[in-house]
Length: 349
Image (cartoon, rainbow, N blue to C red; front, side, top):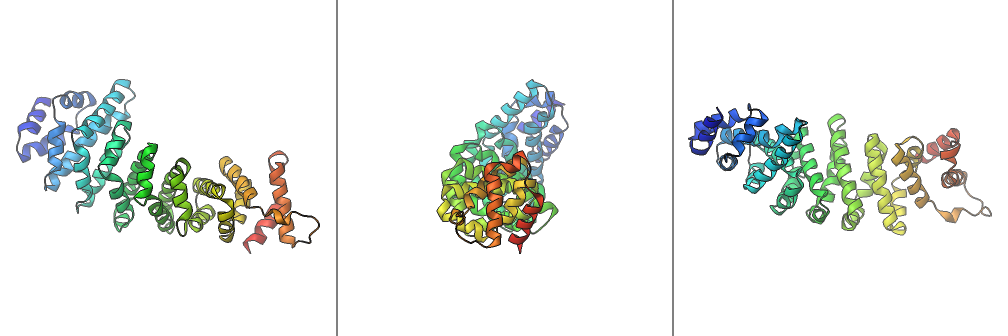
């Protein structure tokens, strides 16, 4: 059976190649390993270059089975095979052809092409080549266009995952930023926040990527801080998002404020961040609590600290809470819940 598939892929006509590509997905990992060694990857990539959507679909499924299927097996041999296959597929010229597939008008093929790129991008050896082929602007265009609404949730998550894989190669972050990645992610977070169930998953994924960019790159941080509406978007995500989203949003806001307190302190305060930061300082995740307290201390206006000046009750209450945070009282003995709730209530009115 393996020999017939190899012969069909190497020398067969359209119908023979179509059937052989479909048959490939039914093989075991050992069988796939044997036929990959006989040179079936190049003809599968050539099948992607046709205008025949049925042939392209079969070739994409076949390549995915070669690159991905063995991943679910625990055997180290098959894991190594998977990595080698991903490198082989990339070096055989798949990446520019996959980018062409991403620009076709068939949504299923676009989503399969995205899945194939995601699989290749998980291999460190492929990341520079993927980026050098112009992948980043094209992926951001898909997220930044009507395609976002027409593609499935999984396809959008896969695009974000590809960008995240590429961002772990630090030298590629400037390319993501210069291609408009920060603005695209902020726009996606705002857009996806309008829908609940599916949108929440997109927001979480986009926020993780955005934090990765701003924490690893000064240029990414400056771009995020200087983008119109960014702070408002992050504060809203901190108020309305999931626990993970809140954690990432407050981490980004902290980085922004630390980069230039004089410039960004007032902007964060004007977006009404204090109430949610106080809330997170008590009931957020451990990382969210720590970052919320650090950001609250940065936002604190020490001009109100003098006991000689008569201050409004709100400011006195806030200053009392801030002293507790600064002294670590909340960690050791538990901050007064009644006091905190009173402060949060006043800040939200």
